[in-house]
Image 1 (tube, rainbow, N blue to C red):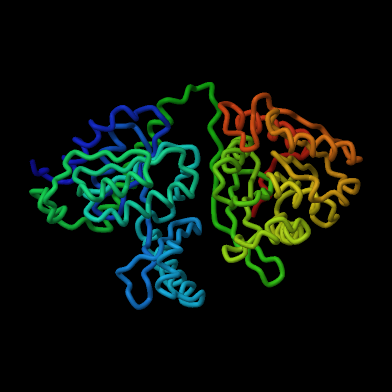
Image 2 (tube, rainbow, N blue to C red):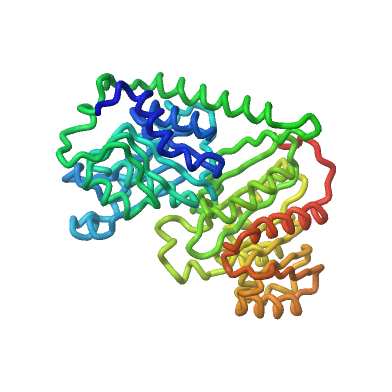
Length: 444
């Protein structure tokens, strides 16, 4: 049965998704036609609404053939098989990527304006379109959402081609639809009114959803609860020599203590675990900077991934640039990033006043450990036996104030219920104790 319009289709789709209500849901509309549908879904689920903007990376001489996709936050997914079979060179790949990054940024600014992208980390993300024919955009959106830390990804559309359903199930946890005809000529045939959705309509719907979210928060907050701090977020590009590093800076109003995050191997500034901890620190009034110490091209080089000296030199260089305007600086290092944090903390001009390591590899900074002066907290899961032994040895070698906190039942990635909350609480307390400064608005 055809849908009257996108709004009516969204209401009907929301009924099918009603079981997700109250489960930390974030609804993402695929611009432009998916946003009116997503608006109704978000409204009925009492969930925040945002857009998920993706751009296909087409083979240069055959642009309709996708060799990958890009999304916000520097996320890039490549189909290595297509790249190899098409003979695309690194130069050609960079050229296509750079062109699409410009288009992605322009479209994102046009649709979202000054509102920051909503954080996907540890959320149940529902990607909504007005209909799915080939599934290419939804497929890319799923991968981008996953890269940005989504805990669970659901694709939802009023109508979806049967072949697309089968394909999307390989990248989504669930595919929800109302109609899936075997004979599928196009999305438009399933709507009485399938007029083009304008950018202006998308902007208006996002603004309405944002205003509704703010009103809900105000109404639900008791008079005794303090207002959460307003947080200004922006992408940053500190340099280390000739290398530009990618990062994300979040500054609560009045913050003058900064915690810089160094990630482990195979991770990035989009790490859902580090973003979880960073968010907890933001709520406590700390500014946070999540940095990628390697470029996209360098991430595949295992020698660079474990080169603690190189990572530390870049971390120190970035810290010197980021610390301006902050009275105190701390480091939060995870896995191999912990070695970089400990190594860089020795440099006197970084001004690091405290270090926290989660599941760290301090052995990679073995020679520098006795030189660390900043109070250091080592956090390890009780079931991460090898790393726990390494941290015991590291603690015995260090001469500064050092504590080893063991999270019962936790493994290396702290995926167990409550484990990351414990890490966040320990880190907040440690930085709160050792980065003691009078809080005033010195961030310019």
